[in-house]
Length: 442
Image (cartoon, rainbow, N blue to C red; front, side):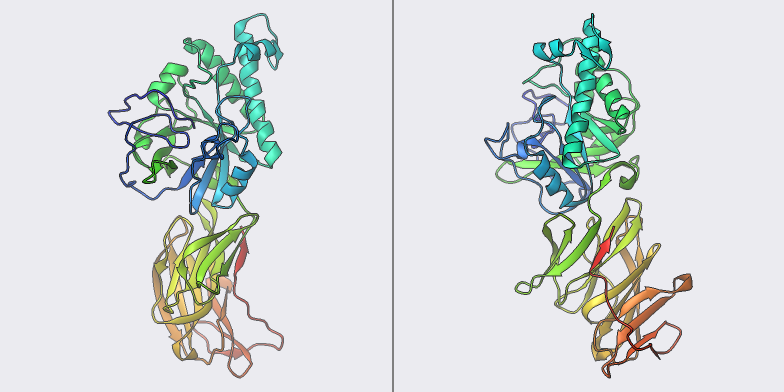
């Protein structure tokens, strides 16, 4: 999204957008967000200075549930010069990705070029405007094709653009907007609109029931400020550094569907690692960079897939350098689970909203923890039971019929044995292997 050059009031709140919000204010807000951000958006402002219209703004750090990448360089028919690298960055920092495209009123030369198009050979201005809008939607689709993007949904950004102003006639502007939306729908996308009440009225002003993405003063405030008749799915808030630079954070509203139904899964696999010098835990998506999971661990974390309200997400389980068991998703923080001490990489298995975690506890015994997960796959409550044994390493955990956990471990005498909570240890056939999950396919 672009930074508007004109300040205005939005429900008596002055807002600022660093990487594309639409409202400006001399002093950026620095109040903490009401809830943890679910996602970010970024575009051409995050390109290096001298690359297109890049402003050298920072890309968001950390990982999110979703990222939204801008397709344009601020105006229609001009692609974001950093699109490919930013798309890769988004896929390396989130579970789901999608895109947005800026819509603009055609220039004189673009109107001339729109004499023919999807709506035919034109003899009227209205026809040319529709051809132009359709072409802007097709341009966005071509940009996504080029980078291998295939999200089920894209957003269109409708706001004033000083570089290429909309007309003063909302009916004419609406022809462009509606045609662009129809074009994207024709190309197979579900479409939502990014705007805010005063700007929507200024540019288009018609009533629509499409999903809405609304900038506001917090990660939740926009949820209650629809600019038209559609459900608000995202509330946007600008995050700032002390330098004044910043980027957009986004919160999901209650009306938003599961991310898996509208956004593209960012990665087919996720794996974990541990830095042997710092003991820090890291995770890496396919084609992504290794990002810090925020804890020092004795061995690389385990990771398993969890079916959540957001779709399939990774659940990480690790033993800290204090030999305590912790679990987290990307959207949650590390949560202490279980009781007592553990070593190594824990074994984990998940079914529904329950995860079973096995580890080698003090005295070489088996520690088996039943972990409850919330609707987002994040860990909540847990109970731990210890079982005798002489484990030489971490156990593997699988689930038998009815979700009964089965722990399989190598013993100090070299045998491999298994048990359930209600049975005793039984020696496994020769050649049985024991492995814990340090990567998973999403």
